[in-house]
Length: 153
Image (cartoon, rainbow, N blue to C red):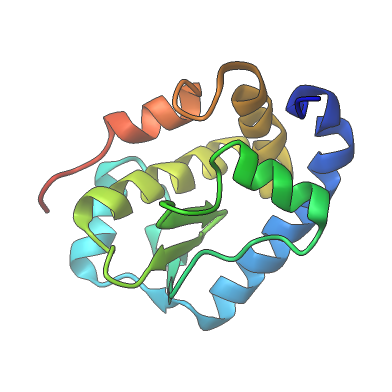
């Protein structure tokens, strides 16, 4: 039997929001503020408050401890092998060695999307619904983030 993300969303969304908010708080406390060059990159992709962004370098992106949430994140391609960036509100995880302008501009565009939504709790249901219905690559929010990737400062 295939996992049905769309059917599982009502149970997963509250867990995803709780997990994302906890990690956003962690990054806020432990992450680094942007330097002038990255502040400019964030502004160039629409971020209203780039001074609030914090970036935490990690060896790998964290996975949820909750088994259902973990399986859904890996199964949809949101987390797991090959993923090197993750944005949670104003918090951005970047795997060591992958902090390129291209990746950070993509992640900063997600910050902009969170700002437009007004919160993690407002953004995640929309984002996860898109992934459940059209897939990660075809998600309008991912397409938008890819369209705003910068290849140089």
